[in-house]
Image 1 (cartoon, helix red, strand yellow):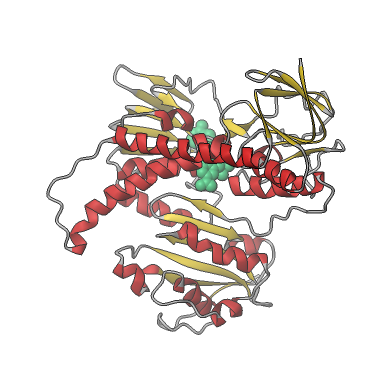
Image 2 (cartoon, rainbow, N blue to C red):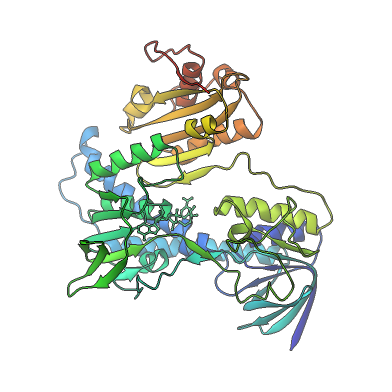
Length: 469
Ligand code: NAD
């Protein structure tokens, strides 16, 4: 069998693995990147990028519907989902080619096949490039895939996971979505904007349960306004095929639709790669245990991304990849989780970082909330996106920003300011003292900061929301 000997091997070419490989190559190391499928992982091929291409298309449709507000009369228009699906595929293809070029430009040896540990320095690769890769240091970045629940017998046609749903080239008339988490809500919003009848069935008392209550409430309200049916506190036991579609069963109730999306979480790709053979420790949830340098219990073996993370997010995986690569190259880097942005591409969008007011209270802070509604912003009114708000959670004792949440147009971009603020331990006064350009939506942060200080300009004076210990 062919042998490849390098300084550093990276197993998995997703948003965790490929930045790790690039950083190691930039540090002058010889690097092999082993990938069983397409470069770019879930994010580029079956997640973030294709879903955003579809969501962008649905926004064009929304703009057409609202064109009248700007005096634009659109008398006749039609929408062809399969053309939007083609646009999505083209974007993915283009990005993938770009990534392949980047890997080649960094002189990283791309090994196509499925890698399994033989021992803690050797990986056997089967598939297109059969070989044995030997490396001094190995970074494992094998990611996750949609959780497959036997009671929801997936058939890829009527009962689908997010990967199969992204591959459809036609729109259904109706969809029942099991799970009101991030994936469920992003697809619910996209499909409702395209005129599909949507029902969300969520086990917990509210959708987006990991977000602040104010955020989940705002999204629920916006969804209901779009006509999305939301049923919370329901545990779907089974999904079955009917003559004309599918039926989700919850006790003595049932929910019918043409197709069903199952979005109840993801499972980790840690099996079958031989981690147990080399003695890598995992916790009781199957997550690989790593130290702050991203090193596992085995010297010279690092793990990054979903398999080794409290956050299953592409941008966290990428940062972990750089930390692992630095350490594998003999430099020192540590991973920190104090300012992790979360962005959800619903309509309206969500951005959040740090603590919610309720979490701050639980941790014993006397916290103040500064909030500002978009409807009071000139820019939001001018562009006809007045829905949403920005809010900052502040430690009243020190003024430090503990968290921030934003719901509304471009929330995914707006949250960056608060990520930088929390990362650098800024106080709310720093935001109040910062001149924000006018007219922009980022003024909402300025106004929220002024509100937290009790000195609002564009809102009537009001008692501050203080969270007594
Ligand atoms: P999730 O864990 O976010 O949500 C799954 C939801 O399903 C939960 O709310 C859970 O209560 C519910 N559920 C579980 N079993 C159920 C049942 N039998 N009946 C009804 N409801 C049930 O998982 P997801 O939405 O599949 O997303 C997976 C991961 O991908 C997440 O970690 C997420 O952070 C990540 N992701 C992030 C983004 C983003 O950042 N924009 C986008 C997509 C995915």
